[in-house]
Amino acid sequence: MMLPSLDLAGRARRMHFKKLFQVLVLGGAMAGAVAASACSQANAADKAKKPAADAGTTDSAGGGVKGW
Amino acid sequence: MTSARAAAAEAWAFRARVEQEAALRFDRLAAVVAGFDPVSPVPAMMRRAADDERRHTDLCARLAASLGQPVVLDPEESLPSIAPRSLDERQAVLYEVVAACCVTETESMATLTTLMAAEPDPEVREVLHSISKDEVVHARMGWAHLSRESAAVDVSFLAPLIPGMLAGTIDESLFAAPPADEDPEGLLRLGVLPLEKKREVFLGTLEQVVFPGLEKFGVDPEPGRRWLAGAAAP
Figure (tube, rainbow over the protein chains, first blue to last red):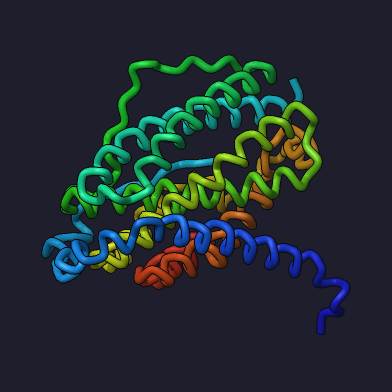
């Protein structure tokens, strides 16, 4: 079993990622919620729409965005 | 020139081009999002982000030049969409926002915060600090848009597209052995993650930030997790 003191680096890394989740993902959701209620009624109709039948099929090429 | 200095010069030159592309992308996406979600705060965030990215381009290019690699950027550069052709306009925007912000800007924030903690040289630290203040907002605006779209439309179509998105995010060398002459301490001082650390940050960010975030907003992370298990397998 790993002694607690030896797992400090691992714990720090987990805390780092947890903080990023809170700041970026949850913080982003809060930022997006601004004015969301104003358009929720209009969005209800859109919500019922389904994606195009071929949306996301493997024959369609998509790429990624390179970063740091 | 030392190996760390040459590698860092190349990395900062690459970042200058990445930042220039991000500015073009955010300008284009802001106009489209405003068309179907006029009360969204995201288009305004994207327009500010485009200005940020132009400033970052200059910062990265100047640092690359100071390390010995002048950067020549094409002012007429244009940037086509990276979304699959089968998606409609709104879906294509969501695909591109998730790729650019929820994946790449989120990964960039993890990289920046890791680099900041590694005691870089003062001039490098100043650039990292300046960029990281903005990149927080750039990552957030992706999650903001995904959050809004998940409340308005079906976003589950993204799940099978995540592997292709992730594959396009990385260089194949990410899962290879580091160069024999790699100087990890020298790289960190110059604002670049050594390969092993880069891999660790990439994997940790996907597993603990990006995949849980996608799941939270209704995008099944399992296809992405399966891709990652295969890509990272020795």
